[in-house]
Image 1 (cartoon, one colour):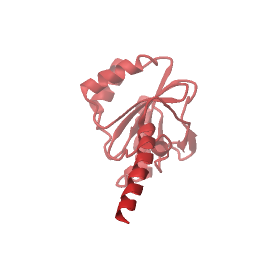
Image 2 (cartoon, rainbow, N blue to C red; image 1 turned 90 degrees about the vertical axis):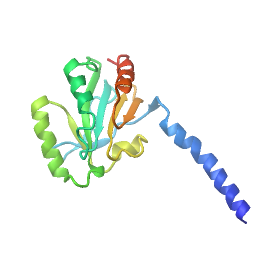
Image 3 (spheres, rainbow, N blue to C red; image 1 turned 45 degrees about the vertical axis):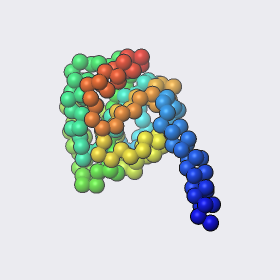
Image 4 (cartoon, rainbow, N blue to C red; image 1 turned 30 degrees about the vertical axis):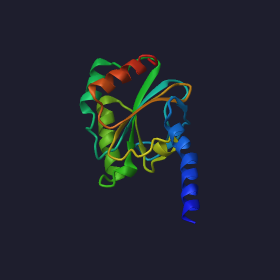
Length: 174
């Protein structure tokens, strides 16, 4: 009986492992999702299918995780171009200590300063739909081509080497 249970477990693992590996392969097609605007209204990802998208998917519990990287990115316009649109998405589900309304108010104030677009993800809609896995306590940098392919994903602290890798990739989409 134990032998059959072990064989079944191995077969199940053999079936699930390729699916989990495929979910992480890049590039892969993704679909536009509906999130929430800072005003609490339904909102789709801006320019999806029209421009290449650079998305900062941020846990509000760790908003400064890659502050040096994002400051350098803004200062030097390393990922700017007429074919790319950058915006932020707050991962509110993984930030239970920050009330959603308060996070939206803070983001609203920031958008006044830098005219950025910021959306809210209250239920892990983006990370679930795109198979990103656990994004809790993570700054996630995403690049989506205008063809709707997720071409770059990085979670957590961005090292100088990872930043250079990102710049090489984003140069193809500017």
